[in-house]
Each structure stands twice: as structure tokens, then as C-alpha cells.
Image 1 (cartoon, rainbow, N blue to C red):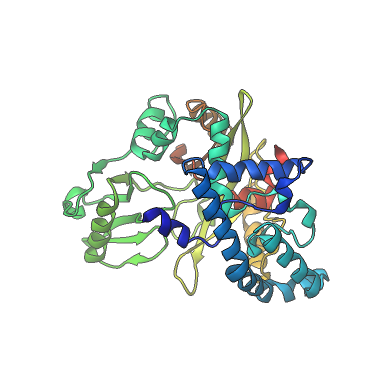
Image 2: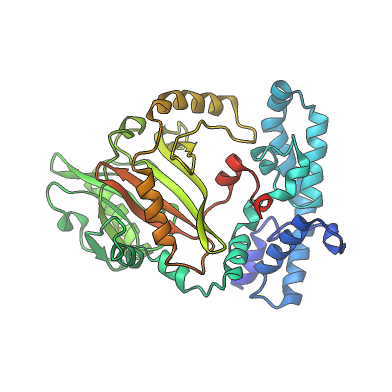
Amino acid sequence: MKKLTYFLHRALPHGLLGWRYFFSGADQRILLHRQIWWQAGKRWPRVLWLFFELWLVLRWRAFHALPACWRVLRRFGATVRKNEGISLKWQAALVLDLAFTWGIPPYQVYQFGLYRQPERALDYIYDHEVPAFQQWRNRARGGTGAGMKMIQDKQVLAEKLGGLGIPVVDSWRVVSRTDAPPALASLLAPDAQVFCKTRSGNRGIGAFSVRWQAGELRGQTFQGHSLEDGEAVEAAWRGLCKRDDALIQPLLENHPALAELAYSEEVITVRYISRWQGQEITCLSATLEVPTGRHEKSGHTRYQILPINTESGQLRPFAPQGHWSEKLTADANRFWEKAKPIGNVPDWDALVQFTRHAHSQFTEIDAIAWDWVLTPQGPILLEGNTGWGTATPQIFAGGLLSKD
């Protein structure tokens, strides 16, 4: 029943599906997308898998594709026509073609700038392909799942890498999953400033920072919402402990060279995605991710992202290949003027060496996204992620399949 529900809630199949798959002389990129899609169903009986995938294709084309195209054209079409001189008619024809022919999400046509160069569409990995893409890459390296299981357990990963001399954030305490955990206030010293998160999982779900203020605990969720008093903090703590084992870690401090960029005292992170190329570990993408404020409507933390030159560690301006709203572009340009004087990311060479050493322990995992905090004492590793999103690397550097 769960498997049926899973398919009922999907709007798209597990990859790009097009009639060109059936031609032997197909473009190499088409063959790669076909392999990725086929990988997604390896745990299913193939006849059942093909039936459900065909059903998803028909449902996408009959019910979801046209409304999705309409929403995207309403949001971005007029601005692109005004700023780039590309007619709405051309944009509509292209978005509809890619959505119906291949099942490419219309919003990613603008995210990757495909309305300018539609011939590059097959260079990209799209959001609904990401899990299968990563499984496909790992399988090519003989992945068994043991390494991924270790990376998903933040405590085990920290113990392993810390033993190798890689600086990792230490957990002051590990609290086992329970519906009735001890009160957080009873676990913390009077001057404690900590960050609480689940032992596994990603995207900061349930995580929050906390500190003492005027004799009472106050905090803030990872998404940026305030925990105004001790009762709110304890409620967040109980919710966290219901999800998974909870880690209590020291609240880290930003490097002085970067501290003025961040909103309040929230930590700035470097996301460094390392990958195997043959027997060498290289950098697929590196970005500086800076919390800069709150979204007016949602209250969530707003981030500015700057790409990093992977050789030198020099910060680069925000220059995506796709279309962004005029407001977001203006905000990014103002932020770049503030960040430009920093030049190179502090302790970049050390961060690169530590990352390569860490990834060398996982020969069966093709690519890992490592989250680092740059502190006054040097880089400190927060965690590694095998389920990293592919959108940001492709926004700045082009499609992942154009590099294969």
C-alpha cells in the first residue's frame, strides 16, 4: 500500500522519458538519462515498474504539465521578454515542448537558462532524477551502502573522521530517541550555547540553536523562527527527540574575516562537493552559503550563495546561467559588493586537504557534499551528505552530464 501511495503522490516519472530512447543511434546524453531512469526501478519487478512509470507519464501530460507551464510563464515570461527580448510565444513553445517531450519541470527551464539554449537541455540532471542519478554514480563505483549508512550517522562519521585528525564538531551529548527526554535545561551548563540536531537526516529538519538569556533558555530553529521562551525551546527539544537520537553540539563562531556578512550570529557554511575522477578526488562545486536575514512572508532564513574558485578559494560573484527575479539579482549584486573585499576564503587549502582525506575513506561513493564552518580556529566539519541537491552546482557551472 505504501508503494502505491508513493506513486500516487508523484507528479513526474523517475527520469526523463521520450520517444528518442528507442532509437539505437541516440545522443549519448539520451543514453545516460535512460540509464539513470532504469536505475531508479532496480528494486521493483520490471513489469510493474514500467506500468507505473507509463501511468506517471500519462498523468503528467494529461493533468500536470500544462498548469505547471502556465504558472512558470506567468511568473517569468514577461520579465524575460522585457530584459532579453525573447518573445512569449517562443518561450511558451519551448517550455511546452520540453515538458511534454521529456518531462522536464518547467521551472527548471528558467532555472538553467534553457530558454536561451534549448539544445543544452539534456546536459542537466533535473530534480526528479536526483536520487536515481546518485545511485547510478555510486553503483558504478561498486557501492554497497555501508559507506552511505556511516555518512548518514553524524556521530559515527564524526568519530571516524576525528580519529583521522580531521577537525569535526564534537557532540557534548547524545540523547537516545524517546517521547519523554530529560529537560534540555537540565543538560546544559548556565553559560551554554549549543546547537541541537538529529543524529541522521538532512536539511536541518527539527534542528535549533539555544542559549541562556536572563536565566531562561531562548532559541531559534534552523529555518529561522524564534523560540521565545523556555517552554518553546523544550517543545522543540521534545519534537527533535521524537524524530531520532539527538545530538547536542557547541554553537560555532564565524571566522572574523566572514563574520560581518552573516545575519545576527548565524553560522556561515562552505559546501564543498568532492567527487572521484578515476583514482583522484576532485571538486565538483564549492559555494559559500551566508544567512543574511529573514523572508518577509515565511520568516525563514534567507541565504546568499557565492561560488568559490575551487583552485584558489577566491570568492566569485553570483552569476547563474538561468533567470532570476530582478529583486533577487539586485540583492545578490549588493551582497557581492560587500563580500568582494574578502578575496579568498580563509584556510582554504586546509579545508581542501581535509575534505580529500575524508572522502578517501569512502571509495564506493562517487560524490559527497561536505558542510564546513570556518571558525577562528580553522575549518570544522559539520557533516557529509550523499543526497545532495544538484541544482546549485548546475546553476553556476552547467549540466552535470556535459562533464561526463
